[in-house]
Image (cartoon, rainbow, N blue to C red; front, side, top):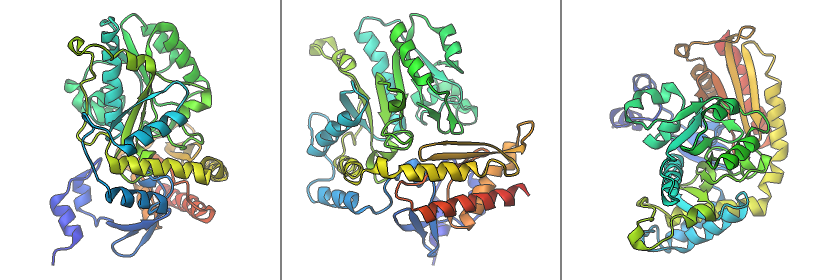
Length: 424
């Protein structure tokens, strides 16, 4: 009888994975989970230390979210959002507007972080056309940015390893490193500036200087440009507040959310925007100001029902307050690793942690990517019952908020052990 592992090797193609290596190894096949734990088909248990790629917030098989999906299945799983509406989508939009930075009042649904960013890009461009400023077509993005894998989002991305191959398909973007660089390129053609607020994710969990986001908001307002905040990773409590923009009292003109929106259950995303931008698309049909964009599963009832339940858990369990001690435990545990051999930097924000390994700490000489030092460290962690993924030589920890103190201690001790093994 052919095993699941054999069938995986025979039929599947995994994302961000060199399949030659994958085919040479036995895959971990997840069968079940509960809380912060996952279990594979051989009965081995793992702590889900990256929240299943930064999506799972309250734990696997959370009873409230699971029940909400079951209840919705008894009604309807999906119906078109084109020319129709549905109760879960309406309820979720109200909740999102109530918790979003003040001034974001409209919700446009899509499927994932990339598509939420595509919506923001197209809305920004058409906004200026509808406002009779068609010269505003240029977008500014930051070095080492990552905004998704669809082509518009890739155009904004600044990580050559991921994005350079596709350059012939992309639109031109003005790339800057900081506010000084942004000030040098501003002119009347600027449509929008795009940023991952407070921290860049796939670029290596790099923290922005404190106050930069607020400064950027003021710059965009002064120069008539829109500010697009990519809160796909940082949204829904990951930085210690519901949205990263709250830390500096900033309201962007467009904000993309996804990942944790449904608590890690189903694909769903949203782009939030202002009444000013929404109003620019209103007019007579013959003016063709309509936003001609949509997805087959826009406003999907199952996803929206899960998301409503997810946000209800935040409210009823006072999640943001209860997770503060865990944020401190993560911070302290990571800081304790700072003096370990080959640990060149430690970064943390809320329930986000990163440990960057260097070949030579004194000179900041990195390990060559071909050494796969981060991948080897995560493989060692997997052998010890902890699942996460690296970004190059940076090992990332983003556990679900339901993780217990002993479980988090275990994650941190396993990380320390894995580092010792791979740098020995």
